Length: 280
Image 1 (cartoon, helix red, strand yellow):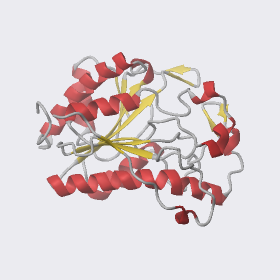
Image 2 (cartoon, one colour):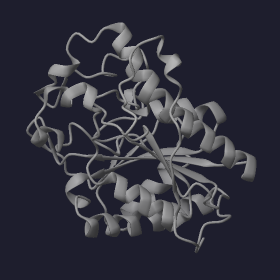
Image 3 (cartoon, rainbow, N blue to C red):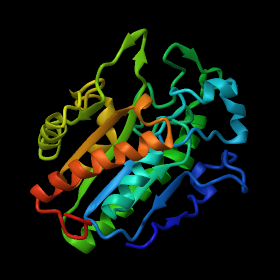
Image 4 (tube, rainbow, N blue to C red):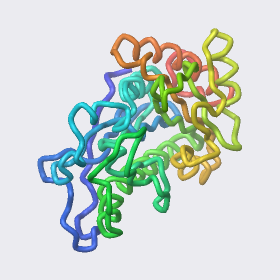
């Protein structure tokens, strides 16, 4: 396998913003990254909360740099794990390039937490009194282009293989609302257990503490990206949450790439989706 390729794409034209001034400046990054775009495996990795980037026009949403480094702004460590898995599986990946505090790509457009006014007890001043037009601008510049990239990547995979799986990568903070979370990994799923159930079995056999729809549930708003893209095509899918203290270093991330990569190879092979995956 050759080194994974990173590609970027031009965002939607500003006339889609209904005349509103764009938030992204010309020198700022596009709202998503496509990594290893030509990967041979019939699986797409997506990472909704890969970045803590906030465009200059939003002035950090009124938060300090220290606050923006916390889990409230992004899923710490998961971008490294996602890219590592893309290399391990030779699979394409789509990663967001904006903070979920700008607009959360794992929320439906009408969800109350799409533009969160607070997160884990932290007030987000820049998200108070967001007008419908301002909300629509954030959706048009960030949320929609990201999901457009995911759908294009899935369409390409289906065209090449006739079948595909979708794996959504996240991470969770070890302590939330003062409560410790004992799981190493959470497996989130809704009604389709084709990937979730065997994946939990494989991980538990290794002595890993696995949460079944813990610390969040795929039945709830956290399953939006999977429902939007996987269920529309009846694709096997799963959302994987890794505890952040296990992957907040490059060494830790690499260890979990090995663990999850081995497990996913077995699960995908069991679904007949082994073509193009090294070692499958």
